[in-house]
Length: 181
Image (cartoon, rainbow, N blue to C red; front, side):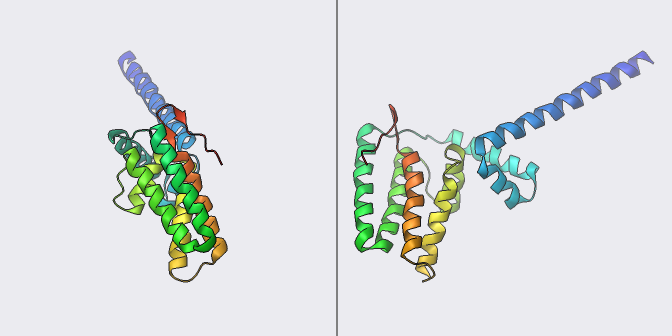
């Protein structure tokens, strides 16, 4: 009889530990991913599926060789960004395309794979969860413009959204890169 009671107690403790571990995992993922966590829950329809997907993303990105930029690289990209901003005055569409290319170049320099947009956004969500939605919005606005559905104000907003990610990506070996502008 005591053996049965002991087994039940051990099982109850193990179940409570498992539930606690799952709750802590959820809190860690929700805290780390922020709005990306909620977006993924909506997209998958289930917190459990979202958590598995986000954990897989984090594992994938940990296996990549993501690196910070050298100060020289960051300064070069910053100069190029200033050209994008100047280009906007005369050619908003060209500026948006250049901003998209520049973000992709920075990602490549940092070691992110750039196969397709969805993979890029998923990979970025691991280390840049607060600004990855800006990237999605910028891309959506650029695609709308390509279909003739967005005006100059939307192109300005696309550039602003690209800049949020660009600034976040512009980390250097010695810390955050401080832009002159």
